[in-house]
Amino acid sequence: MNLTHYQPNRLFGNLDELLNQTLRSFGPLAAARAFEAYRYEDKDSYRLRIDLPGFTREEVTLTHEKNSLTLTAKSEREDAFHADFQRTFTLPDDVDPEGITAKLENGVLDLTFAKVTNDNTGVRTIELA
Image (cartoon, rainbow, N blue to C red):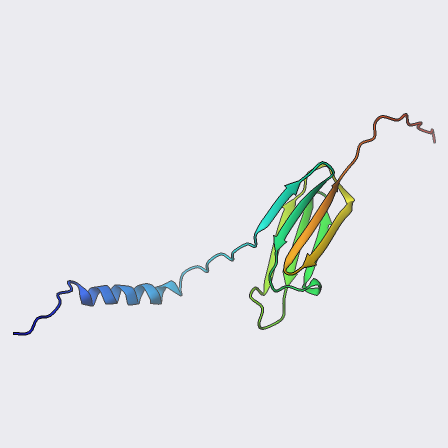
């Protein structure tokens, strides 16, 4: 007498797995994972650190318009983990547009936004035209 392990619905279980794997490729593409962004604030500035692994300085573009900063990273290399990436950040109203600095080092983009300083303590004379 031979003993065999009983597996109910073995045929249908394998068929179900096969259909799931086959039909998965026809579904919508999974959303690209956004890179991590860390925000910090101190008395004089805001800081934003973004992980951009594999991108070089030449492949990263930053544009500032009104209260938004757009980060675009595009790589033409075949060995790149991510070919392209774009993300827009809304900046606070008290950011000084001339005080934005950026540094990319070891796959981490470090942005610093200086806050606008309001010196309302002095008297200002307004000349008539």
